[in-house]
Image (tube, helix red, strand yellow):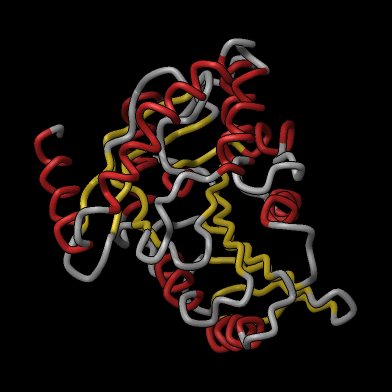
Length: 288
């Protein structure tokens, strides 16, 4: 079985506490062909130094450009090649586009700082099933399920939906592998602050890209500390994206916010945190 080369891209900015955990989850993969690209937004909390030290301890430096702080390296024991760029950017989607420009693999995955692969066999299992089931071709986006972690006790498996992605992608970004030519064709619109990934996937889907769902848990995503409060910025960006494909979408989306999203938030805010997480786990089991 011939496996394709994959480019794993990690975006980080001032996240010294979590970046090494993410890097470990990539480096310990048993997949044979990994290019690991790390884009740092000129961190000033020690993240950049941690990353450079990590790479230096594991790999031979093959190229280094101090002027723009860029280096390439090859792992001493595994077939993993590093590319590390640290420079200021205009936001996460600008940083992600820089990663795409450096990618030389056939497929790209964004595993940003704080996130990680579900286990050490994830990529191998994904492409083994993809090749056996689909011959390894005729797909632009491969996506799967996600392990959602709420706290040290509570977690659940979020099953992606094998359905239309016309207005919003039905999976977590970290649990998707995207064909590199597709990434280069559309990239991420830096005008978006939050929903750039939604814009990318809906644009690709509505322009004929083929999405393939595989029932494999790809990533572990920690949402501890992330607010579930309805966001005006997210609402605006989702409306702007949906409007491209249906001019009535903002009306439908407004009703959804008024009669579902906001009431749900109010009810959840009245429930103690520990009971809220238990309810999430219970509901996920009843709907799985």
